[in-house]
Length: 264
Image 1 (cartoon, rainbow, N blue to C red):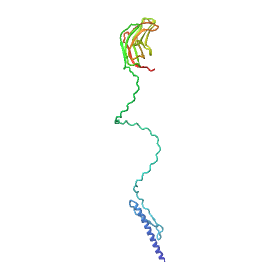
Image 2: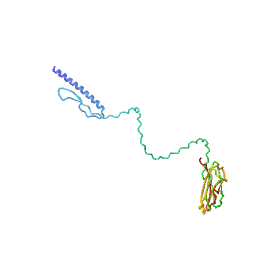
Image 3: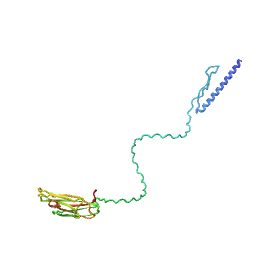
Image 4: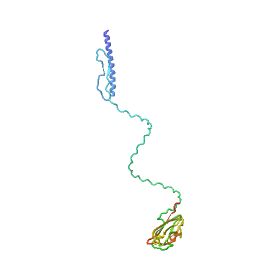
């Protein structure tokens, strides 16, 4: 009976040992299939060192295998939400000047515009002017000194005139002379006469007041065409006529220029 129990125990031990060996062998085979490199073999199972009786059994894990290859690229994910607008950046430096571009083709001819309003004549001094000059002394006390003829182009313009030369009076007490310009025989009425006067008081009666003089002005309301501009000498209102002299030792001149009318 005792032998029979020992025999059965031995058979049972052998059976358990076989099963454990098969289990550890199967696990090691699975581990070796995952590894790319062979690993050094080691005992798969052992006991606690005691003899005559099996207490427990463990399996030693194998060494970790190498990393596997990268997997296939996954599908494209859905777009994310738009982020908030960031602050404005600082202005960059001005770039270098680029090369000239290719000239473009000519555009189509535009439509003819409407006719504009008629403009007033714009006159420059070089367009219509004249100067009469002479060098001759004239001792006349009253009367015409010189005439200068001018052709006016427009009716709605003005004449700019001046006399430049030497004239004066002498040898009198409380006397005066007046020099003036006329237009076709009449003095200007718009805006007024173009004139100048010289007066002598008694303390200077023994002196001769010959000086270079300048008389200048504008005249409106003169029709176009020939205009005779005259330079005259005569008496001042309320004063005694003086001993006058015009054009002493110098050139005298009358300047005439057609210009636009002054603003109102």
